[in-house]
Length: 165
Image (cartoon, rainbow, N blue to C red; front, top):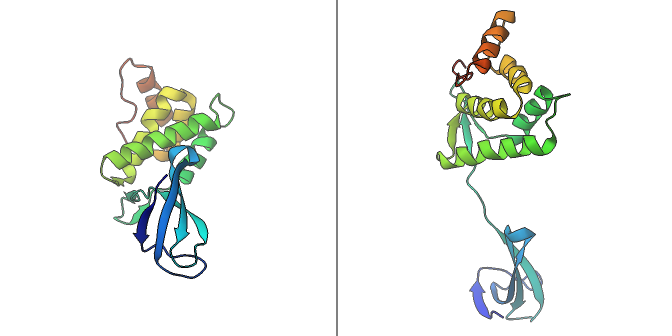
């Protein structure tokens, strides 16, 4: 049992900024800490939750515009590309999480080109048809020759199908 005093956490009843922690427990499968506190003035007890605040990932577009990384946008594109294919929501979530984790490891600022290629790289090993569908939009295919070229690259053992953004 903890009994540390903390200045700065205000009592929600009397607004005094002197409270003490009387108990701490893990919450949300370890993603947060629940603290039971007691006010030094009114002796009322209340809970606080602490969560890790991750730095946002910034995507730099070709135009130079910067925008926050949008995992939902990527997920929607992947779901559209994999419609009717043996790819489910869990597969899409794992793929998006992998891209997001790698972007964080790179320092939290990536180009839109990097995001597209990272998605394509993972999608290629998941489902080749979904890969072709996604690539056709991402790489702006203009005719059937673009599809044929990309399909040939997929068939080549060790061929890189993601070389042309």
